[in-house]
Length: 282
Image (cartoon, rainbow, N blue to C red; front, side, top):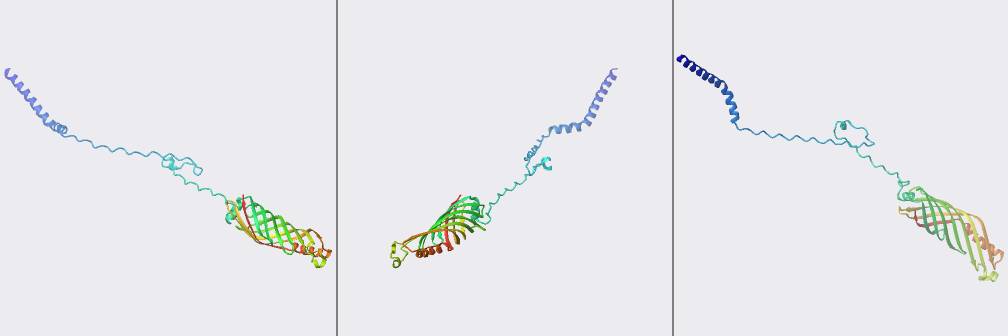
């Protein structure tokens, strides 16, 4: 009994050792790799790249009259195409501006005031008020007066209306109508050998006529209103309306001769030239 008990204990002890040996044989590779993995130095993980920021969507532009419908790119989130700005509207050209600066300035004005000095055919002075009609026309009221000295001293006064047409920039052609009055005085016109009165004789005459006139010239005008011009040459011719004469110290024949002399001078056509004007327009 005693021997078999010992044998049994020895057998169990051997069997246990054998089981441990087998288990160690099969489990040692697993245990060795795990132990190696635990004993090996741990590597720090590589830092992750920061995520790329996505661009914020560009808000769609406000609808414009040229592009009120959204485009396919705008619906997909792409930046909307901004239409180019519309060209600035061109202002309407001022009437006559294509013809020159004087024509453009005339078109902006309504009234002009001018002074005149020239020859009709003797030296004369005058003034004018012009009404501007666009850039090519001026209707002008005028008055002129001058003193004439031939064998009879006389004064001439004219008043009328004329029309100036500007086919271009400053050049004009004018035509008009005027009421013309010429007055004359003379003393000592009767020879002393005839009457014996000598310088005691006197004579007065007055001649009224309606006349037409035309002329050509230039008139330049600036934007601020100044205008300078000239009627280079013109002509007027009248028709008598009335006349009146009186004299003292002369026979009827001598008075008639004086009347005829004055009448012939008054009714003759008059050459106008170098009538310069200076004024301002508003």
